[in-house]
Image (tube, rainbow, N blue to C red; front, side, top):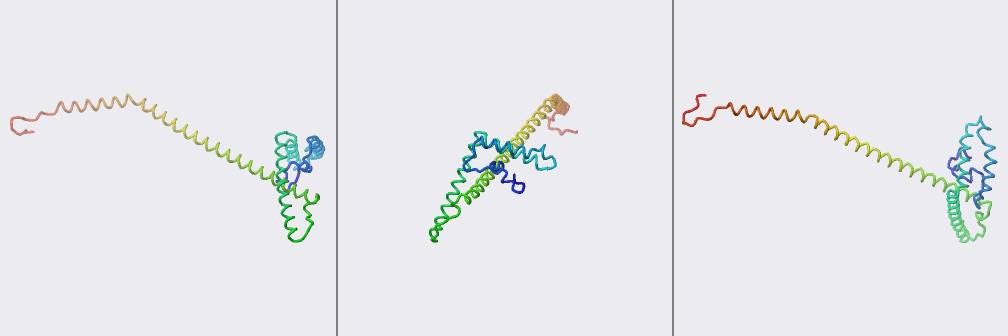
Length: 203
């Protein structure tokens, strides 16, 4: 575990202190896990606040390398890192040939291994970042969908409340209309009819 380099802790090979090329067998992974878990278990490191986090990293790394699906993903990442390193070394060799050199240190195992390890760690970090981005995007989409549902629910309730209020006041509206109609009819009944004899109305 690397407290100062959290992105390295995303690499299960780094956490379990195993080489990634070739990818260790499940039996090798289990053996190393048991050895390290005894060493860093929180119960044996109660004075070290980092122990619980380190043990958590260790468990996650172990599960990644023994679960068939996640192990297959790890193998693909190692293969991708290997291909990238091969391209890098090939470029160095071409440059060396142009300069009249025959030796490329990066071809040697003691140089190649750490270069591959770094590339693998960066790929795991990239994978983690992409996963986090997708999870954040999914959470934002769920939040937006929930807000839309709440807005729709609020509109529905307001519509129902309006309809209930409208129905409850129906009798009042009908009564008001009837009173108005009766008033108009009474006004017409008491109004004097116009004179038809040519004499102006004295009123």
